[in-house]
Image (tube, rainbow, N blue to C red):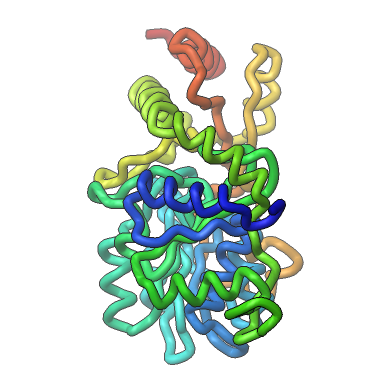
Length: 338
C-alpha cells in the first residue's frame, strides 16, 4: 500500500489531535491542498478568488488552473498578511472565495476575514503552507475558515522527505467532498462521481510525518523562543524593518524576515561572516510573466517586500549563542554598539 496505506489514516488522526481539527486530509502537496479545497468549495470557470499579491506562485496558479480569476490585494507592511481594507474593495458579485495566506507563519486577522466572508456569503480558505502550528486569538486557522491548507515540503516547520500536504476543516460535507476529489473523484473504486485529481499522499511520507509530529510542539516552542530573541534585539535598529506577527497571532517561528535597502550588499556581508540568508520571495504575483495581466496599480507594499526582504537563519536546534552571533553581525553591519 504505497499510496493511502493505513499509515495515512494514522497520520490524519494525529494531525487532527495536534491541530484540534475535526477532519484532516493528507494530500500530495501544499499546492494540491489548495486545488482540492477550491474544487470542494465549488470554484469554477469565471469565478473570482481574492488572494494577496505577496505569496508563492501556487496560490495564484491553483485559481487559474480551474478557470477562475485571481484578484490581487495588497498586504500589510507590518506582518506581510493580506490587507483587509484593500481586499474589501475587490469583492464583486463574481467573488466566490478569499484565500488568505499566513506568510512567514504570521496569521492574518481571521476574525475580521471570517466576518467579511460570512457577510458576502463566500468561502474563506487559508493557505497555511508556512504556518503549521500557528494560532490566531488562541485558535487554529481551520476554526475560522471553510478549509485550511498546509504543506509538508521538507523545508517547512513540519516537513516530510518529499512533497506532501494536508487540508483541515470542521465541515463534514467539505471533508467528504475533498476525500473524493483527491482520488480522481472516485466515490467508489473505478467510479468517477465528480471531477477530481490524483492528489493522494504517499504512505512513506505519512510514515515520516508520523515520527516527526512527535516532536513538533517542542520544535515550534523553540522556534518561537528564537523568533522572540530576534524581535527584541533587532527592534532598535532603525535601518531595518522587522515583519512581526500581529498582537493576537501566536506565530510558529517559520521565518524571521526583515526589510533592508540594498539587500544584496547586506547578504554578501553576512555571507563573509558564515551566515546564510535567503529571500522569500523576490517577485510579487503580478510581477510574474504568467500573472502580469492581473496587476493592480494600487498595490505598493507587496512590491516593497519583494524588493527588500531578507530571511534570517532560524531552526529549532539553533543555540542562543548562534542567534546572538547573527544579531551581533547585523549590528556591526550597521555599526551599532550596545
